[in-house]
Image 1 (cartoon, helix red, strand yellow):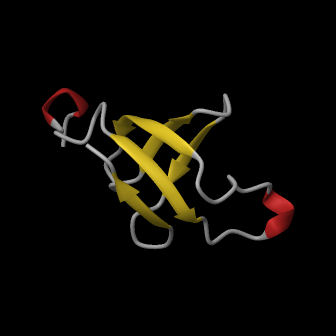
Image 2 (tube, one colour; image 1 turned 135 degrees about the vertical axis):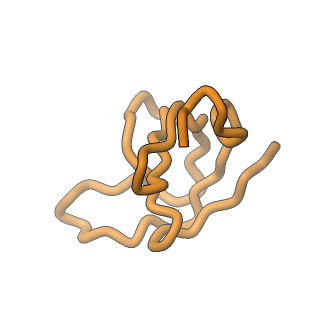
Length: 67
């Protein structure tokens, strides 16, 4: 799906849990961010409020869409 047609672009999210190995420095729970793109594997690229940009994996990570 093309990014400009994806209704998730610009939505705010709150991370509940990022199911990553702690050594990979995952985003902390309760961090908020904005979805800036969605790729062809349906991974959400998020610009987190802590300044990082990291993918959210909808099939693995726990999160809620706020708006």
